[in-house]
Amino acid sequence: MSRLEEALEKAAQLRKKLEVRDSTAKSAVAPPGAAVGARPVLPPVTSDNLAVKIDNPFIVTLRDPASPIAEEYRKLKSIIMKLTKKDNYLNTLMVTSTFSNEGKSITALNLAITMAQEYDHTILLVDADVRNTTLHKYLNVTPKAGLTECILGEIDVSDALVRTGIGKLSFLPAGRQVKDPAELLSSNRMREFLTEMKNRYPDRYIIIDAPPVQSCAETLSLGHMVDGVLFLVMEGVASVDNIQEALTLLMDANVLGIIYNNASVDAFGGYYGYHGYHGQKYGYGKKEETHAQV
Image 1 (cartoon, helix red, strand yellow):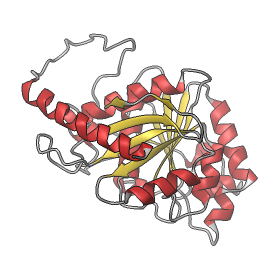
Image 2 (image 1 turned 45 degrees about the horizontal axis):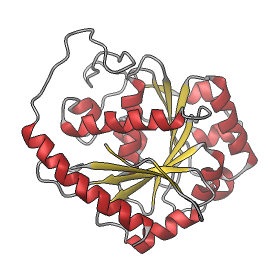
Image 3 (image 1 turned 90 degrees about the vertical axis):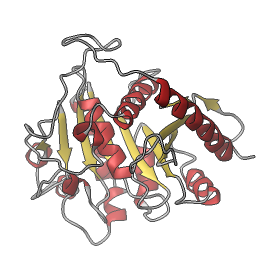
Image 4 (image 1 turned 180 degrees about the vertical axis):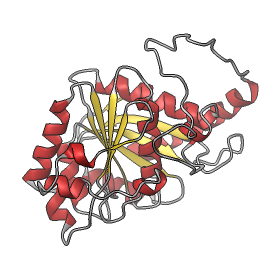
C-alpha cells in the first residue's frame, strides 16, 4: 500500500470517529471576551458589515461560522500555524491540487479568513491562478489590476490590494491575463516579488491560490519559491495514480501535507462534508509524519 493510500485510509477511519463525535457532542458557547487557546481571537465577523460582500454559501467561515465545517477550518489553521512556526517562520504558503474543480480556491479563501481573525497575524491572499481566476468572484470585487501588473512593475502592490474588512485580510487579485502565464509566474521577477512580500511584514502569512499541478507548468516553479505547499485532494476526482504523479512532480517542494476534501459523511452534509489533514514531508528514503484530523 502506498503512502498516499495509507493517508486516505486513515482519513476514512477518522471520518467514522468524527461522525460519532458529532452525534454526541454538545455545543458550548464561550462567554464574551473569553480567550480561545493560547491566542485571543477577533470577535466573529459577518458578511453584513464588510468592505466586500460575500454571499457564496461555500464561504462557511463567514456565512456559518458556528458550523462543524467552519470548526474544521479552525483546526486546520491551528495545525498549519504549528507546522509553520516549528523551525523557521514559514509564512508563504501555496494551495494547489491535482486537477481543477477540487475546491482549492474556496479552501484557500476559507483558510485565509480563519487566519485573518487572529490578532497576531495579517494575511495576504494572492490569486496566482491567472488562467482561471475565481477568488475575486467569491469576494464580489471587480479588480482593475493585480498580480500580473505588480510583477511587470506597472503598479505598486499597495495600489492593487483589496482591503476586505475581514480581520486583517488583504486580497491581491490575479490581474490581467498574459500570453504566457507560465513564463511570467516562473520568472525571477515573481521570485523577487514573493521575497519582498515575505520580508515587508514579518507577521504576515501569504496564502497563494495556485493553478492545479497537472494543468499548469508554473505551479511547479511556484512550489520552489514558497515556504510550504498545501495539497488538496477532493474525494472522487483524481485517482490515486493521478495524485501520486502530482506529488512526485512536487517532490522537491516543501509539501506540508494533504487536505482531504468533500468526503462522504452524512452527519455533516453540504458541499464540504469533511476535511482530513495528513501532514507529511514528501521525499524518498525517509518520511516525517504529523498526520492529524481537522
